[in-house]
Length: 185
Image 1 (cartoon, helix red, strand yellow):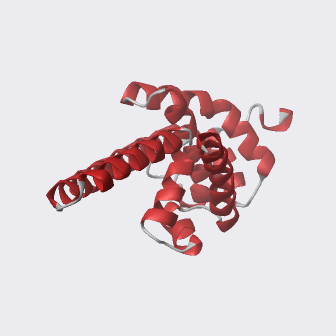
Image 2 (cartoon, rainbow, N blue to C red):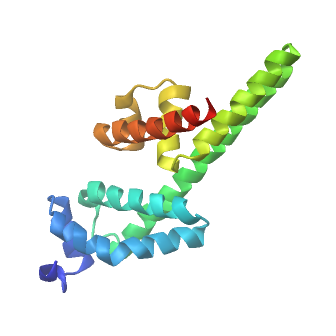
């Protein structure tokens, strides 16, 4: 990494676009904390800011080839990528809240026996508690896989993630969920 100490951000992005991991490590060292700080100023909190900052840096790795030094400085481009990731996160959360509201309205309108309603409410509360144990990235892949019944390949494409990352996040989430359910038994 010492070899890139004096390299410009633009030069690093050019090297990254050709797959140079050492150049990426240098750029990561320069920007990861700045990206996280910017996300916090935008309103991201704690672990969500950390997770989103990691996602932004992965996105920079993948999209470095689309950087055009004639249109913007590297730092400007990096912070635009960051801002767009934050906006995308807010949009996903807004859709999720609307989806939850729709589910609640459907549940309230059905003619359900009181015993069934009580059991359903308890199960939903347990499910929410279990989901709260997951990171935002794990929740996202669990929702898409199990609640929206999306295949892993579609989830990977939709989230711009490698298929292995989707499977890994699902596996880790399922381990956490299984441990939670076993404690309730």
